[in-house]
Amino acid sequence: MRLKTNEFQCLFTDGLNGIAELFEKHQHELRIAGGAVRDLLAGKRPEDVDFATTATPEEMKCMFQAAGIRMINNKGEKHGTITARC
Image 1 (spheres, one colour):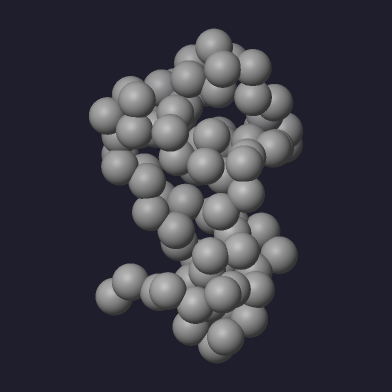
Image 2 (tube, rainbow, N blue to C red):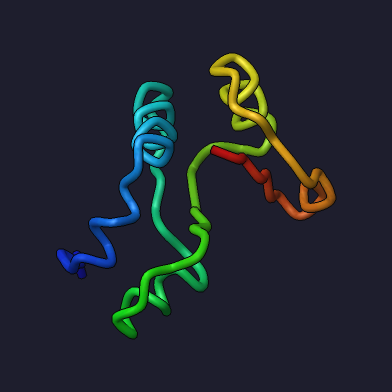
């Protein structure tokens, strides 16, 4: 299912587009996941966006570091979670 709502379109800031382009450049899939999906389906604008990807945490860290994207809260790494701040 693809969403074409205003709430969905509002997610696509310059920062999010940059992240999406980075994953595409490195040939990794990127999908919106978690609470953002729930919020969108309920007609609400998400406060933050989580993604599922085919990239490993190590690959994400390398991509983000090379692109100068700041990573925060490394506590989730042991669970495969990398938090980028844009």
